[in-house]
Amino acid sequence: MAMGSGPGGLIPPWTVRMARASNPHGTAAMWVRDRLDGLFTDKDFACWYPVDGRRGLSPAQLALVSALQYAENLTDRQAAEAVRCRLDWKYCLGLELDDAGFDHSVLSEFRGRMADGDRADQLLAVMVDRLVTAGLLKRRGRLRTDSAHVLAAVRRLNRGELVAETLRCALEELAVPAEEWLAGFITPQWADRYGRPVRYDRLPRGREAMIAYVLQVGADGMHILQAIHRDDAPPRLRNLPAVQVLRQVWVQQYWHDAEGQLRWRGPKSTRDRASRRKTEQRNTGKTSADGRPDPATARVPWSSLEIVTPHDPEVRYSQKITAAGQRDWIGYRDHQTETCDDTGPNVIVQVVTQPATEQDIDALERIYQGVTTQGFRPSSMSSTAATARPTASIAPPRGGRSRFSGRSATIRRPQSVPAARRRTSASIGRPAP
Image 1 (cartoon, rainbow, N blue to C red):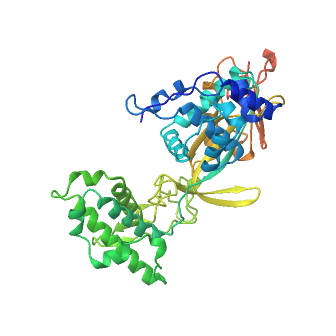
Image 2 (image 1 turned 90 degrees about the horizontal axis):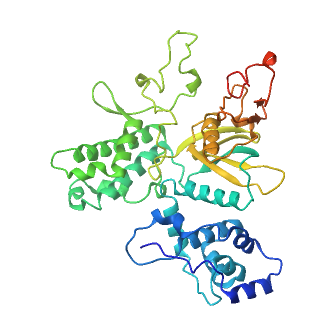
Image 3 (image 1 turned 90 degrees about the vertical axis):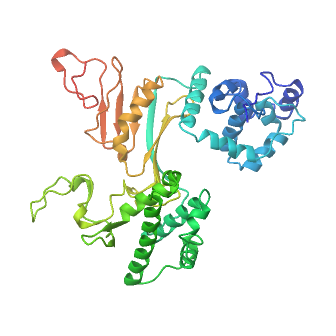
C-alpha cells in the first residue's frame, strides 16, 4: 500500500464553525491544530511506504491520532470512534463533518510501521523541532533524565520450560517451509511433548525427574540440529530465526562432557558478579574468568548473554535496587530525558532504550551526546541517584557550558574562573576555563 495524503492544509469552514461553537475556549486537540498546524506532514513519512500500490490513509493524520489517543488513554476502537464523532478531533485533523473516519485496525498497522528500525526516534525528533519552531520549547534550558524498566510482553519461563518451548517454536517454524522433511523425524512422543505450548503441560516434579526430562528435550533438539546441518537438508532451514535461537539456547543450557554425553548446565553461581571477575579470590589466589563464568564449571552464562524466552530473544533478565526495594524484570531499560524549565510544558525530547542488564551510569554519555546532537545546549542536566555518581564524566561540546547534577553528586562547569583559581572540573575531567 502506498502512502496516502491528507485532506489539505485548510480546515473545512463548517468544521471550524461547529467546533468553535461547541468549544469556545478550545480543547487540547484544537490547540494542537492552532499552535502547531497539525504537528506532522505527510513528507515526514515518505520513506515509510512504497511508491506504488493503492493509496492509503494519510500517515500524518494517523500519527496525530496516535498522539491524541495516547494523551487521552484511549483504545484503538475508542480513538477511531473519536475521529468519527468528536468535533474537536475533526477540527484537529482537518476533516469534513460527514467524514466517516477509518477502521480501528489501521492504528495497529501504523504502530507496526513506526516500530521498524529507528522510525519512532525520528518521529520524536520531528515533533521536538516543531515544538521549538512554535516557541513551546527552548533549546537552552534545564533537562532531567530518569530510567524505567520496560516489561517484555512474554511469560516468564523456568529453564525446563525454556528449552521445551524453544524446541516447540523451532518445530512450528520448520513445518512451514519443510513439512515433508520434518515429518520424517516426528514421533508420537514428540507430538505429546511439543504439540502445544509448554504452559499447558505440567512438568515433572523432583530433581531427578526434571533432569531426565530436560535431557530428553536436549537430545531431541540435538537430533533436529544435526539433521538441519546435513548435506541433504534444505539449506534455507539453517537461517530460520527460530532455528538460530534453538542453537543458541542449546549452547547456553547444555554441554558435552569428555565422553561426548549431553549434560545439563548448572545454574549461575550466586557469588559470581561482574565486579569480581578480575578480583583475586582470597583462598586460592586465582583470577576469575574474564567476561563469563569458567567453562569448566559448566554453568549457564551471564544474564547479559542468556536467552530467557524464544518469543523475544533480545530481552534479558535484570535486577534493580530502588527506594521501594529490589525489583526484577524481563525486558529492557529505558532512559527518558525531558525539559524541566519553570515556564512552558515538560516535554520528552529523547528516549534511549538499552538491554536490561546495562547499568544506568553507562548511558549518561550517550544521553548527553544525543541531546547535543539534536541541537540542545542545556544549562543543566539532572538525574536520579541511579544514574549519577561523583566520578561521572560528561563532556559538553566545545565552547558550551553545562552542569550535571544528581542526588549523590553535583558536577559543575563554571562560566568564568580566574587563572589563579583554576581547578579540574569533575564534569569534563580537564581544567575548566
